[in-house]
Each structure stands twice: as C-alpha cells, then as structure tokens.
Amino acid sequence: MIFNLPDKSTSDEFSGISLEEHLQLVLDHVPDLTFDIALIDKVFEGKEPGFTQLVEKCGGRVITLDLADNDVNFHHDKNKLISAFTHIFS
Image (cartoon, rainbow, N blue to C red; front, side):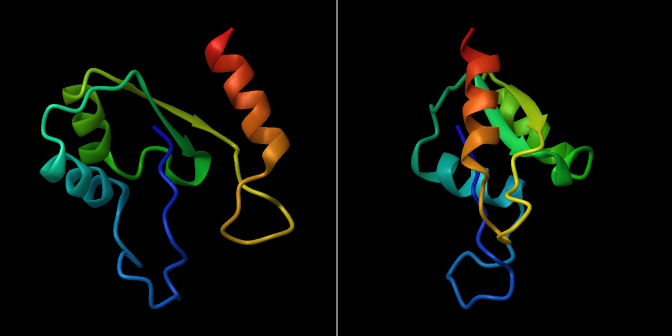
C-alpha cells in the first residue's frame, strides 16, 4: 500500500490528515484489510508510531525511503519509486 497524502494547503477533503488517520479511514471501510508493506516517504520516518502499529495490525511493515520529487512539491519521483519497487520485489 502506498500512502499519498494531499498537500495541506489545498482544500481537498482529506487535506492535513495524518498517515494514521488515512489508514484508519481505509480500515473503517475495509476492516479485514491485510497487506505486506506500507511504503512511505522518509519525511514521515519516526513521526507516526500509531501508523506503524496499524500497519502491523494489518500484517504489514513500514518501509521508509526517499520518494519525493526534488523539483515538484507533493509529487513522487518516478525513478525513486521504480527503485523502491525493485528493492521490495526482488
């Protein structure tokens, strides 16, 4: 599962929610959801212990990597994602 949070400065319905809140919203609709990995950007590393606990409750583990595009805010770098997926699935 990849968690892609919206820009906090937008008027998006989910703007400003945490990783933990985002996952809890998903679990409210799919309570038996299981997954192996939650892939998040390094900016969140160590900042949301509740998120890590929820991921573990779903049978998964958190992988934290540098995924952000250095040139465009709130976007993933496609090459970093390719590298992350290669690492995870090989």
